[in-house]
Image (cartoon, rainbow, N blue to C red):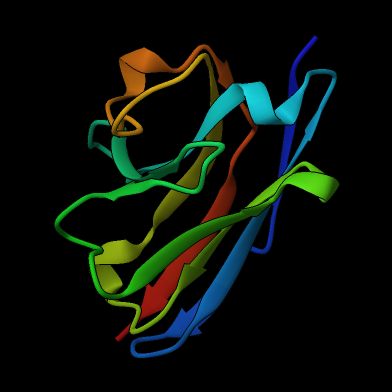
Length: 125
């Protein structure tokens, strides 16, 4: 059974940085595409970034140039490095896994069947 555990959220001032981690358990990590999503209060869950096992990536326009997704296959962990954070980045961030191979890795939530519990990111102005 797939289990995803996020960590690294917190509170930061605008312009600051955070790194989120998502450890995967119970499945063969490299056979899945991994994604990061976020959901602010009253808003739809939106895709932020995704990465395939070959390292190919995909980003939402709102985070391009500020966020970087990368993974350590040996540790079965995917990361989201977030720089130049803005108050609009405030949300609950979720890690998700999609079984199979995707080109490009999708950032729409309907591709993903397994989700973590989320970690809160709060950016103050």
